[in-house]
Length: 472
Image (cartoon, rainbow, N blue to C red; front, side):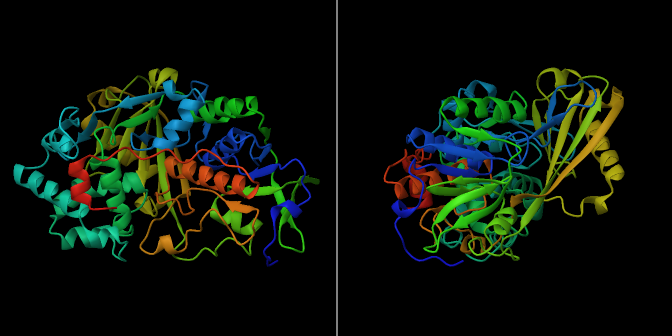
């Protein structure tokens, strides 16, 4: 049904209630922002627990919860961290300032940005710590960073992939394979021969160069199912948000004017003055076929695979590590009882067609790679393994994707979109999800005659970074 301009006041919802469909981080952030604005909110989630892709499953050996895939934030994720702080979850995030790289020969490099040098010079110790590169390669890498950060072509969103740009910029294949590929693919969740150069520049500038704290890793200390599915949900309920789990929205009712009037859920009709749909894009398209852009090659997903391993002892002696030049990309040692029980997980981004989708071979390969670099794993006995793949874990940020990422506002005055796939200016991350929810909530609140708090500002850029990156 097409819509015609109309005022939201004509919608039959005297309590100005907003319905949020979808209980992932985008929907939860939207609900929090609306509650802050004093608006009544009902959140619908089809699963039994909110949290979306930030989910956990039951540990088959030790009991308790294990995250389906390791989620981490970075110091540059200002809105995600603000939501965690306000919900009392900040203490459940361990801040790792040192990034561990394990090179092709097994050499370990503890790369720690300086707290004394101004940005972007704070990265000098990190680069010097990468012993798997020669001094010449480290200099070439540093020059490549400077060139990418200052590239007007990359900043403009040119239809060029990151790999094409890096090769044109003279980055050696070894530097690409052992630095750019693991860093960019982990941050963006997509292969560097597919991601746009603008997204690669975004990661470099905001995630590394902009501020001394930007590259810090924020690792959850508790299972995501507890952090978001229980504690964040409980915090929202305490602020008056009506949380309905196991409740899927089946249809959206619209008046002849085009305005949304209600949401159908399990045979019940929920009147609303505004609606925020915070679902993955394919689910949103099924609910709103005339609103959400049709998924084509520019709006596609990228898979991420987590290989869960249970050994008979605690076998990983680092909190995390980037495994360079291997099938395995990141390894994370589980925290708490799960870690003590010998659980760890290896995360592999852009995993489509990985080892011809042979799971047994994948487990053998990953275990072999861990045994090559972790002495304790050589002595440990593998008790169980589980491979978890999400085929559309993140939005594939290919060249041209920004043209089809929709904004929060739609052609219907009281209907809004949220999700890390919408136009946030960020890749498909937890930060992007939270920003999308807050943007949608702000638009919905304005349509109802009130305001929400603005987005939390990015980390401030020092004069050297502003000079390097220009006015963007």
